[in-house]
Image 1 (cartoon, rainbow, N blue to C red):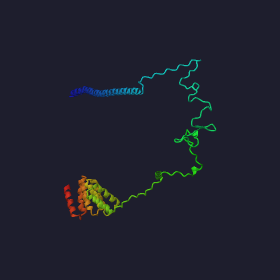
Image 2: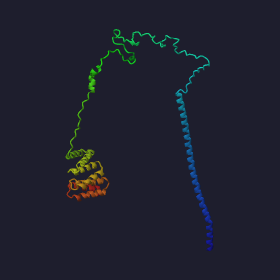
Image 3: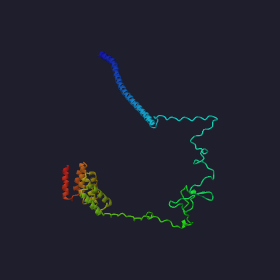
Length: 336
């Protein structure tokens, strides 16, 4: 028996390195597989980056070609492609000691003394036809009349000719400008200059405010016509203006009806609960409690709805028989 134990122990000691070696080999194989997977991923990323790099280089090359083409086109549009104009030959430099040459297009008064524009000696000019020489040697021009020769007025001053202000007009006596009344403006100008009549300020007619009874009846009429949205606004306006009016519980109940008809169960439950809390002894309180149960049923709250239906009989034992029968039928339909 002892020998068998020793033999088993020796075999186990010999197998332990074998198991350890197998475990190390398995770990190495897992690591190698992991490294190969990472290498494949990195190779894919490198190929993708190379592809994007080539695409960017192609786009850059196309952009450079397009810019060069546009630049050349712009230069050609400005005349860069046209043949350059021939330059005029430069004038020959004058030789030292040679007389300066006169240009042929320059006016020479000494060569043509009688030409227009040539300088004349003082006092040698002839008077202009139709002009009169004054005593001081000044020349005045007679302004001819279109009908009968020269006008009988005085000579026109030359100093005023350039400004277009003739001095041949008959002289006005001194003080005439101060004494003469200003010219009357035309009728149209006077009418335009006159101040426009100011219209009296218009006062907007303010409609008299409706009474509480009128507002309530108008809201009830909208509800009877099934115009629920307009009825909602009318009842809200009435409750805001007259929160303590005797018709406030009825208006709150009708406001809840506008919500319940449109299946807005949460808003309807809020209004019915307000009646139960604020006006518990009003005539509409029992029916409001029943409608509160209907709203809770619409909100998928069966237990609360059943409890509300049961509360109608307990809270209001003297309620109308028709309302009690309606509550009982609704409880059976709901499964309370």
